[in-house]
Image (cartoon, rainbow, N blue to C red):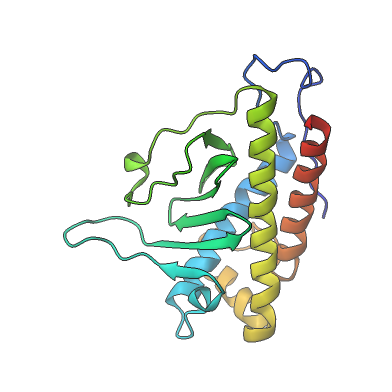
Length: 208
């Protein structure tokens, strides 16, 4: 399945206006469900006896300080200056020159901040630093570049996991999901993320 993204037709000339990465309704619906599904599955991987999530190169759990309640957090590096953080409530990706993007779990509305900061000391959504919608072509290009790498990571992770666990493992994860039957089939998750990443990359080229 290929996802399609749209930008305003005046994206090149609207550098002083607030631009958003606009997705058609069906695409947004798919991407929103896919993100929820992915974070659910990675939570399963974290709790599994093999703790598969933590076997992925570069990923590590971040322990909560004593007395602090909140979501589990896993963080890691993706190479080439990219940093990743995942919580039960969302995911963030940052780059030393691009800034940071955060996606809430139950939506696909990219929010940005220029600082190379993913809320390292945050354990709940309300404690996260301030993120806002991309403003201008430069921010929109950076946002799309970060989303491209995030989608690539999810695709790479799913492709890495399947030979280790077998396809039935991921299917079992989805069978236990509260939205069972509403998401992307287990065998199509990597390809769907890859398609979304390719669409984000094509859009970033249009803005460069």
